[in-house]
Image (cartoon, rainbow, N blue to C red; front, side):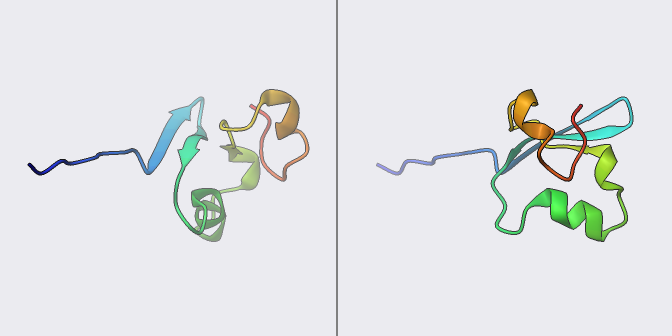
Length: 62
């Protein structure tokens, strides 16, 4: 019998004009790609990090 496993590679929400990256299973990192496309890093939240840790990144806290 064949079995298919499905999984989420990327989960991204737009909240209050910011891109909230909930899960990023890409090799390059979607945040880096968004910055390369011109999205300001202060408009990107690495939501997969705890709020206390986000302050130590180059991205928005929330």
